[in-house]
Amino acid sequence: GENVEQHPSTLSVQEGDSAVIKCTYSDSASNYFPWYKQELGKGPQLIIDIRSNVGEKKDQRIAVTLNKTAKHFSLHITETQPEDSAVYFCAASKGNSNSGYALNFGKGTSLLVTP
Amino acid sequence: DAGVIQSPRHEVTEMGQEVTLRCKPISGHNSLFWYRQTMMRGLELLIYFNNNVPIDDSGMPEDRFSAKMPNASFSTLKIQPSEPRDSAVYFCASRDGGNEKLFFGSGTQLSVL
Image (cartoon, rainbow over all chains, first blue to last red; front, side):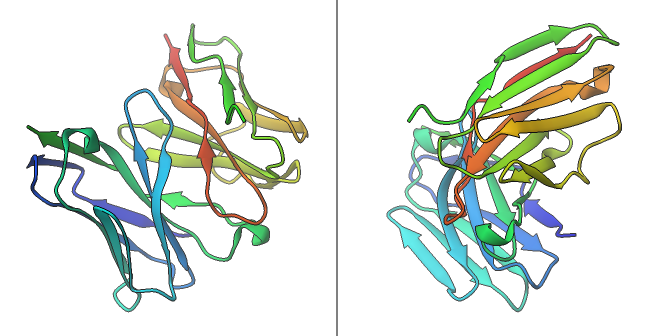
């Protein structure tokens, strides 16, 4: 099955700096790569996703890049703010939701943004 | 919509007791997932259902774990008998057939003493 590796497990940055989280996946058939943010005491929430036919996607201060050849994708957060502090999970899956595939998550990155 | 609703939010029980976790997915969503979160293993998929039918239960740790979805608006995850190593946060999530976005509940924090 799909194996998703995520690094680093913890990341501390100063407010205003950039943060980068990297993931690799094992199944070349995977074609959907979302990122979820989990705040303390809550369930994960989708913040951005990318499909295999796109190399990069941006939404305000967050962006995701995908390298299909190398089977890795990354989350970039620019101009970090204290409210960005949370646990971030990458995930991968193949097919679409109608085909019944589930998301396989990385182990998460705990991001701390210090003022 | 109230989102995915899980109950209870917290459960403390003694080893050997039966534990039942409950989930109400978002109305209209036809896929439901149970995940377990621990520090060591992150978010692990336990089982998921499409249209109330279990599709993949290969993540269920052992026979002590069972899950049911008797109708489109309710699912349970049961652990019998419970063990201390089952202590974790259990999440339920749902999505609709035309969208890959998962919506998570707030989770159940389970502590088995």
